[in-house]
Image 1 (cartoon, helix red, strand yellow):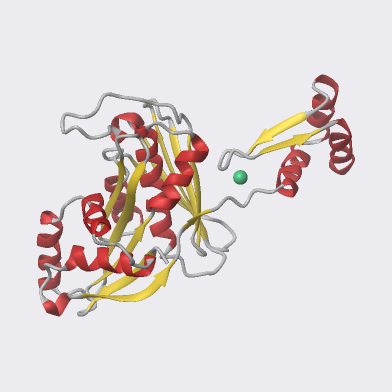
Image 2: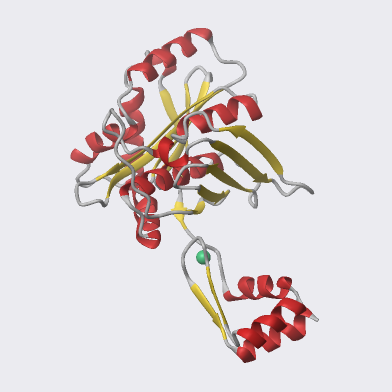
Length: 304
Ligand SMILES: [Zn+2]
């Protein structure tokens, strides 16, 4: 288990925390991302995964879309209540100079734009919330989304650290949600702690150094302990649940066929006449689905 949900002893705030190194490595391998694209996509995948930990219904899912006028154009991630996460960045080969602070310029790669969150909670209509991007650095934008669209006070930290060889060294994130009956002193103590907190990836790296023989569960718990160690004992954070977040795409040949049928008989006839075949690539996992003339004719019959 690489994720957990916790709460402080006074019931003032809830914590969602995940170490997503494996998930982000897989995404980077599939999408052949540059370090800058890995950072943007990795933060978005981690943020969506953490938000999925909050879903109540077993079949609930959500999609987070960052769209901007910068070179990355769009970063999208989808996550469900079972912890399956997938996503993509429209331009995986982007590169920009580092910021003045020497950081990967994720905000610059997105530019001016919008964050949209779509939640499918099994109701007739999905819930859709949208805000203008604050910085495009992902975490700030998600925190602002929670504040404006869901009237929730949260703190969001997301991080992807890239190694010298451009691989993913570590990745993780945390969302802290203030609860309705939060004690004022707890809020003050928490804010002080957050203002002094090192970047998420520094905490994870530090735990990595002493992680020999540690299980995944113990590792995440250790990260949590390390982050909240400075809080007074009455606000000590305790683990409520262990959860799992994984990279997983649920595409299949059947689904692609359904999509082709939905294109309609007229367009299918055109594809058959002009190309005689079709190849569709899943934008999430890059799996290629090939359809020859015979396949297309069969789908055409179904579309009619
Ligand atoms: Zn796929």
